[in-house]
Length: 162
Image (cartoon, rainbow, N blue to C red; front, side, top):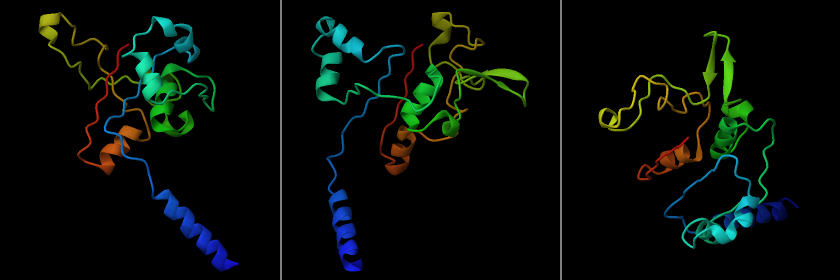
């Protein structure tokens, strides 16, 4: 019996090593408040090189669900990119009260960060909280962090518009 189990385990692990070809590019797009059925509702309004191309040639999740409530923006994005829940990644809401500092904290707020721009020419107030954002409140890594750790040649970029 032990030999049969050993053979099954060896065969199973052997099949696991036949992985798909590594993708050259991975892009994650989240449109806040956009339900998956909007893709179908507005399908005829989309161009062939936009959402239609992403749906037809990429991975499109038609019925994704979160294993927690409530589903706020910050925890949702953190859950998508970490693969875990707010209890683990630490982004429990968009804002929360920090009893140590006595202040309310925005999930992505980071006073040590600065907007990347040509601020003087664009009349941007560099002292404003706008642009002072980072994932420093997150307690876990993201798939992009793990990709960079696995292969130092990987190029990882993050862009956010709000």
